[in-house]
Length: 436
Image (tube, rainbow, N blue to C red; front, side, top):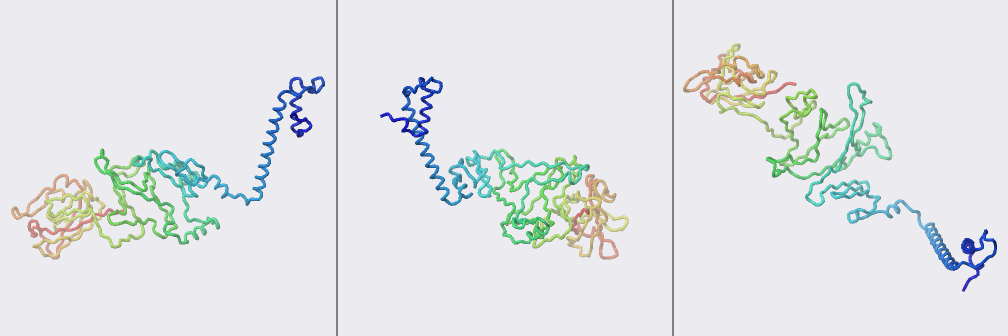
């Protein structure tokens, strides 16, 4: 049944009239008058308009209900916002959204910032394969600082700086007094700025002739002439470095290289020696220690011995008579001696058949090419078969470093080393010390 136009809602009536006015043959404003019949699709258009109107009313009702529910509900908090998008199973759903955990997954690991805890996992996928990238790389550059630059021009900062247990948020006191207050606060053992746990041991690859250097928890690779590791202990009265070793472990191992540093000559440094350990000032505390040290014992080593260590035992097998003192003196050929060497000697073994008290005194030391004529000439030796005769020390020893020791007896007459007998001469312990 047709409904009268007057029975329609105002909005529908207006829309229908507009449609009729623009329809072919319709009595529009420019049609020349007459209402005319309704277009053939008027009913379809009316039905579509009624459907749209019903949908609009339903949407408005839903919106009003939602507004009412929100007005009656508790306030919407940050926790509600986090819960709305939080992914509580990043392993099972690595692509899910996260606010509490900043998550990034890729073929060989993941990165996660979980409630302020930053996790980087570079474990290989699949297991057993080496990671193809460093877990983190930092590139940091500071200005060059030459003689033409001021302190302010050169001043810079570190690539990474961590303050552990510094001034808290309540006081935010970064003055000297604030630092002093925080320095005196007791803390737990695990209040650390950096905690590394590493595993592994040395390995020998199938194509390598010897074992590789063991893996490292921290590897420093300095270039130039700077401090690879520096500890500024101005504000500390505790241990600046503490190493707790177990049986079978080494606390600190320092190995001198056999070649100069890459840039040693370019930087104008002394490239002939290194200092594995440099101590200045303070007190050296050694408690309940056993000492191991490289040393050489020349007893039973032949007529002449060339010492390569700074500590050794030398028998008084050969001698010459010192022209100034008129007492027997012995030449020690030692490659580590210099003209500045301080030589410390003490009796170490007595002649079995010669009980007379005696001692030793150092006459001089020399470096390469500086041997006195008394030690480049033939030295005296005693054997049962030939008695006392001269033995040449050889050109290499005569041209090398060494030192000279005189033998002093307890009486007014100089000791005759021939009285010791063959192979039974007394011996002394020596140590070479280089003064600073």
